[in-house]
Image (cartoon, rainbow, N blue to C red; front, side):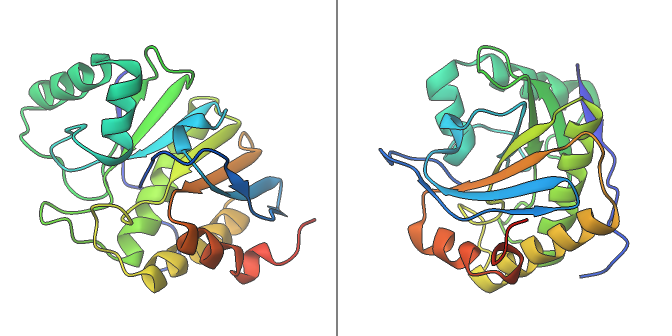
Length: 209
């Protein structure tokens, strides 16, 4: 399956992985049939139908989640992404692009390569929001009920923490306003303990129901 997502902006305007031995699970919250969860730990250790992997405009799995994916599961994914660029006659993809791929030898049936940065690795809350929304829509369309997501723009991307937190609050609000029937569970994972703590403090995560 080779599909590049169309950018579907939400109606309102405005990564990582590493060696953490014991993931710490934050409190979670259920909002309109989607259960949200934050984990301080390795994204690739989460069991899910779909993976949102932070990607660069070159689609090179050279570091962060992509680099860890290649080291753990081999080079088929990189070959797929380079073939995608050749087929599209592109050297880079624009910010906001989401490329859906098979999981190959990984346990994830579908992987969304989400480009939430530009070629200079700059980003902002609006771009992060739109990229997450597109990736979640595409994974839902592929039949994914559970999604494990990287913290887009927070690795090599230079997104200030406050901007990232704003994008997550707005993402939850957008998915309440525009619910996706297929998706039951979304987990955000980060190896940055301070960022995980900040996510736990978001009003959206204060009460679970």
